[in-house]
Length: 270
Image (cartoon, rainbow, N blue to C red; front, side, top):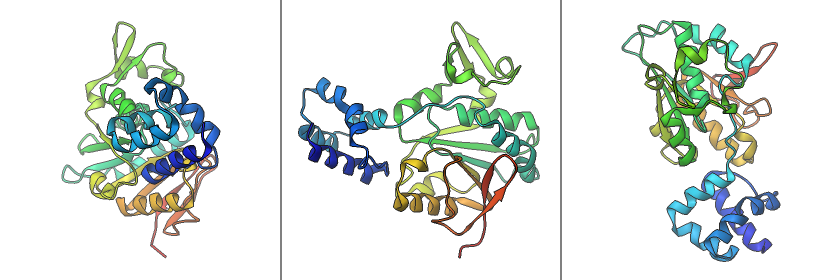
């Protein structure tokens, strides 16, 4: 496969969604080889084809994005949310909606986990709650919106005792998220770098964008951090993955350290 054509495709992917394959062309090649053969194209032809066919762009996104996740992932993070973060917003009235943005939500396990966690706290029974769950991958987003997961799925490998029966309906060999949880989550097909992302998401109190920035270079990490800052309300919090940081690209965030995790609080812009 032509290195120059792979570099051109990597450049297109980078410009579109910020994922940088320029230093990992063999990985990109392995992800797209079968698809190119399936279409009967060579790599040069595919570079042109994907730019003019929107559906093929969606297929390419499905091939290059990582969507491994499960319910109640990152126990320490969830404990911090439940114990120290969510109670800070319990005085929200019906006139003020408590909002969370779960960016790059994949197949929905994380936003549904957040919804279950919110239900368990019983802090917001008199308040409106909305979880915006977005992803660039339409296929996984469709699965997320349906809220149906195989009983044999690894998605349930960390499910706490009793939560499966409490928040899921058994349907043959599947489990479906109950309506009381699904109604708290609003799914959107969004590219984090769309020029209208701030308007699409609106202002929120908490953002979770975990294990996503590791795929971006400094330029796109800076763009993402600026969006996060602008979208968060003044008392908002940002949660990233363990290997991710925004302090070097956006000094407006204050780092909060705990014995088990660290995260960010919106501060004043420098």
